Image 1 (cartoon, rainbow, N blue to C red):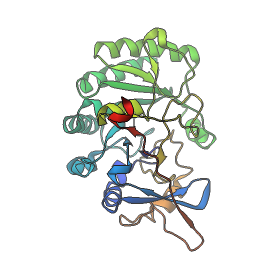
Image 2: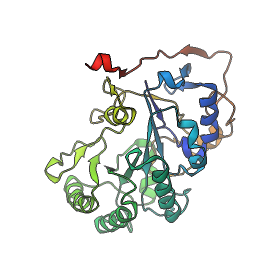
Image 3: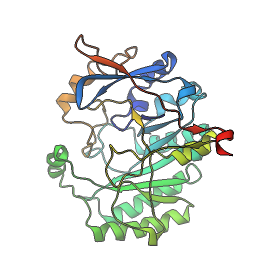
Length: 310
């Protein structure tokens, strides 16, 4: 099975000690976000994990402890934008994040660090020229530290509309998306970066831009020296190319404060959830209740042996 760590929150940035403890105990409990009292017990033994994908904007807290990941196959989706604090309010400086990206790549190799420039949005001070310039400057500094960049354009979720309107932020029209994609593709080629889109309907193959599989079984297979037999994740949007994975995060627990975040309902909810954080607890920012039903998650090993391959 593939473990997603996590689309719902930034575990490397805020909950690394908790996750490291889960690896030591070799299991984690995860609440079903659609059924509060349904809890899954997910095994984390290396022999049953085909790969782990980390989603983060700041993996600095884990850089000195990467040895705990030695038994596992893994890679990072590292989001690195150049927005101001009005959009991404609780991040280290851009300079610090670039250094963290470079250091992570030095430690695990550029194939394991995928750069995400997303979501792309427009607003006061953020037009197409801004994104072209910012992308070029970041690409120059990340050159050699990554081999791929994934981009996406702003998606409108009802829970974030008020935040966007307050800051006069908007998405891009189809014409603007194509125009900017052409510019970014030209820059990416300059720095030998593969460029892909995340869950976008827009076809950009003529610009050399493919559709991403952010949970990428092929990449995990290459990193692990095997082949993984997977199915598409039906829980994601139709345009998403990700392989099926088990996400071990929890909504309303990310402290970055990004105005475009779909994973937090409100600041009040975040404060309520994060107040429950205990680095030794099997659940992230939650405690088991007497009326919870805990079920062992079925394990399906995806990797094929040499005998199976030939």
